[in-house]
Length: 262
Length: 161
Ligand SMILES: Cc1cc2nc3c(=O)[nH]c(=O)nc-3n(C[C@H](O)[C@H](O)[C@H](O)COP(=O)(O)OP(=O)(O)OC[C@H]3O[C@@H](n4cnc5c(N)ncnc54)[C@H](O)[C@@H]3O)c2cc1C
Ligand code: FES
Ligand code: FES
Image 1: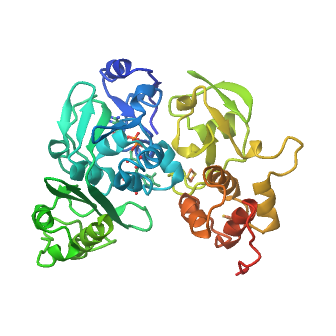
Image 2 (image 1 turned 30 degrees about the vertical axis):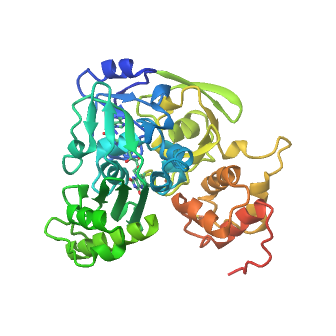
Image 3 (image 1 turned 180 degrees about the vertical axis):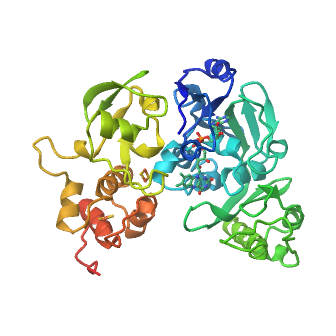
């Protein structure tokens, strides 16, 4: 790691101010950023830790919406959202391993937008709102391709609001070495339609599978997907799986998610 | 250099660190607590597992300065007050849950955190919980057995494969 200054503000306002300086970067749980710093793929002059900001750590369900503070670790979401939004809690409870879940945060996961990360699919399928220090961004406008989001320089995710679906499920086909999603599909059924978001598969990051959404909105059964095919031209192709394999998995995992959501 | 203060194994400690100093470096190099191991340094193996506020974390992927005011417990804080081994440590010894011992501090810390959350886990739950802890020697079988035994469950039916 190259050397950097370290600040640990106690409020969002102080963090925003600290992030205004040149080459400053936010630090969430560090479960992605610290390995990145170690391999010298990032060289900030200053790290601004968000871990000391208590107002960014909460889970509350109210009026059909689950609100999660941007600094809330995965393990806390897994435990505290289990009753209100079990599909999301199960996703959070299966990220990495227990130690990763005790540190990694929802804000860090969404800001990072790793093409194989789990949370982006939940945010997109739920039609979540990403709340930052100065605005609200719809999930549909937030993810901007590989490791890219609508966030501006120094902008902090303070809260994520997930509308709670009638039924939902996340199916993750694990890449066994990294435990990230080789392909992950989040299916969310609302009274006005179904949303399906796919992670791990596309070189452009998380996306909505709209054909499946239409079919499932008519009939919420795995059979409704039967006639559909997934185009493999944008799929990731690497040593863990070919593009065709990933495209195939998208359909299989969507079917499993629908069956499990019931 | 900035100063950091925390509580490690019940004792108030402090020291000067850089921004980039990892918690595991502070524990091993500043405090001389070398029981916490570094296996991979890339957050995969769990040899560096310690507790913060009773919850397991990887000390190779945590900055010392982010632990300001924290309650940290390492393997050196596991034994009973009279110096005898904790139930978990004793179970590892009784069930031959270690060979070279390199992964053991992390295994004991992870396993202790598990029983705090889930006092009577099933074998499947133990194995799932240990996903972030790698052992190159034992094949895990006796580690799982030791943890089940430490939770007070009968392990006589589990074959010693
Ligand atoms: C062994 C291992 C296994 C893992 N397995 C999985 C998995 O199966 N699925 C999965 O989805 N993830 C997995 N992860 C990643 C994990 O979920 C990370 O916690 C997450 O991707 C990043 O969150 P963080 O809080 O640690 O962010 P950090 O690493 O601290 O930061 C990541 C990026 O986000 C920025 N950032 C952080 N917080 C905010 C914020 N509030 N607002 C704006 N920007 C912010 C940082 O500047 C940085 O650019 C794994 C990680 C490890 C080490
Ligand atoms: S040394 Fe920390 S996880 Fe391997
Ligand atoms: S006992 Fe040798 S690595 Fe586990």
